[in-house]
Each structure stands twice: as structure tokens, then as C-alpha cells.
Image 1 (cartoon, rainbow, N blue to C red):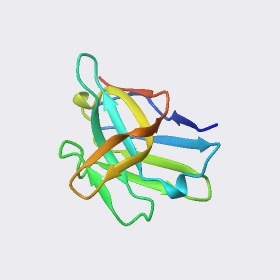
Image 2 (cartoon, helix red, strand yellow):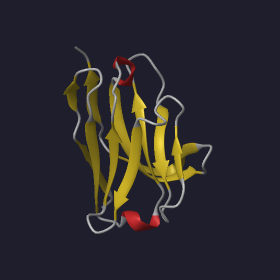
Image 3 (cartoon, rainbow, N blue to C red):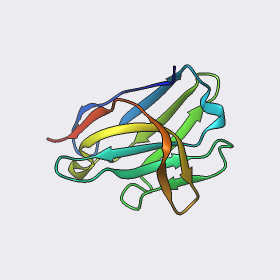
Image 4 (spheres, one colour):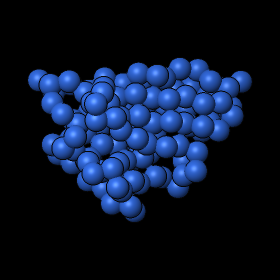
Length: 125
């Protein structure tokens, strides 16, 4: 059974950092493009960052470029999102997704995309 579990969310002050983890079970992440998406209250879900299966292509939303870094660890079957210089507008539920479509200029979920349950990130003083 395909299962994705996010962790690492929490409350952080503006300017702080968090690292989100996305652990997969029941399948290998190696063969899939992986992405992080977020949804703030009253807003639509948006893509944040994605990385391809070969780890040679990444996509970042303009709002996070230069502050967030997506990575993956094949040995741990886990993907990560390192978030630095956090801003209040980064507050949202963050979701990990496997089997997305991406290039260096777009990232989007597909009908077959698998999702985690989400982890809350709150940036506030």
C-alpha cells in the first residue's frame, strides 16, 4: 500500500528555518518525480518545489526560490524540503506528493499522484 508521511512542521518565527521530511512506504520513491505543495486557509493549493527522479531537475515557485531547497535521499526513501528565511506568508499546510509532472519551469500533480496527509507550518512572532 502506497503511503507518504510528512513530518517536521511546526511554529517558527519569521526568519527561522524548518526542514520537512516525506517518508515513503509500500513503494520506492526512486522511480517518481516528487513535489511539495502547500495550501493556506482560504487559498487554493499551490506548488512549492519539485524534483525529478534522476535528481537533475528541480522546480521552485518564484515565492520560495532562493529560500527553499528540495532534496531526496534514496537510501532513506525520503524527500526533504529545507525552508530558510521563513515569512508569515509561508504559513500553510504542506503536502508531499509522488508521481508529479515537472520541468524546470512547471510542476503539477497528475490524476495518479499520491499524497501525504500534510503537515502544518506556521510562521509567526
